[in-house]
Length: 462
Image (cartoon, rainbow, N blue to C red; front, side):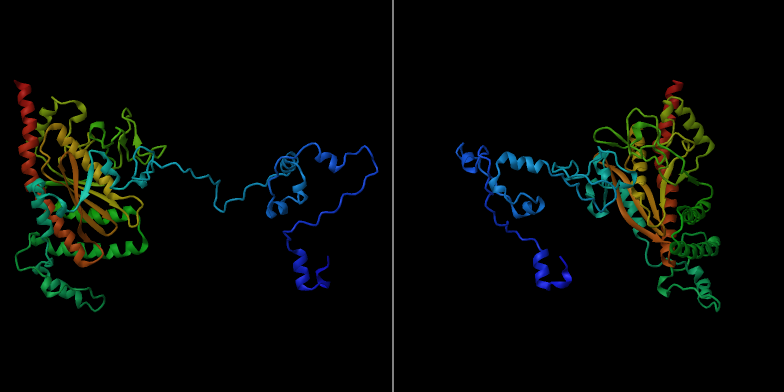
């Protein structure tokens, strides 16, 4: 048919599908007397009931327009002879699978029984573990169940007021703001502390100001460039190292990126007894390992701050360790090179926009510390402070045991290295934590841990 010589309406009518079946022609007369006629076929008995053929089926299967005249067997034979079409290809890559209507085991809540990617774990998954880790706000804790040492440290950290800048640096800030080449923002008059009220060493204040100014400058550059985690680690280490130097060799900053939790008893588990692992080198990339494995939980956190024991105190620990199994001869949750360091502050760091949640790694590490205390029957009322650093953002948490669970108070704002006020907030709270470690934690260490090892050594002599 030539569409050029037909009208638009006529062409459309001829090319469109007509759902009406064509008129049935009368059967041609046959000259063979022996050929069975249609009437003779009907005399043999009625055919099975015929299933109507829809117009769509008659379009797809041409030649079946006279299906009403065919038997059921003939219709089935005709349908089976038509080749089936392949299913349409999915627009997504890969093969598509049919969804099952069965109820998913994780529909009503996340399940830790399945192998999951390490990056998929959140802090709320740890609530279903043993011991359970519950992150809550300070106001949500029942006052009767809150240990006094936890409340004291939290309130001290939160007392950091708007007056952050030492009065001794007022002239230095004013000089920076009037620099003709590159003026810097200066704090407001009501943001300076009263004279001689700072607990920072007076001789190191100018040096501290230079360090914090440089930290803000580098942080802004790294944030714009989406810098690597190591770059943010350098900024964090410079701050932590600065406050270590002020402590007159009483505390030490330790890089613990290669430290593991070796003992199964100090590892967090699912309710079915499987151990959570955080091992990037795992071939299966699974976060669940068997109980009898020798693989350790590695790459847990980045930094620790610990008390530097005297030689006499180390001798007491060594004598007491002689009475303990090899895997628990440690002052913390690891038996690696840090086993002789009593830790009071833990730090986990991630770059900006990281896929992993630093709170998960920090919580698993702190859980090991609590299980270590529980194994030796040491008091668990003293908090375990921890810090997470995500690019320029610093947050602190306080861990302690309550009803056999590990409570994680936070997140609590510690400050930011992106602005002058935020970096001085970090400086104040770091100094509070350092002083807490040298005083409150050390008293607990002497009356609980060191006395424990001294009792062991005395029992051995008897």
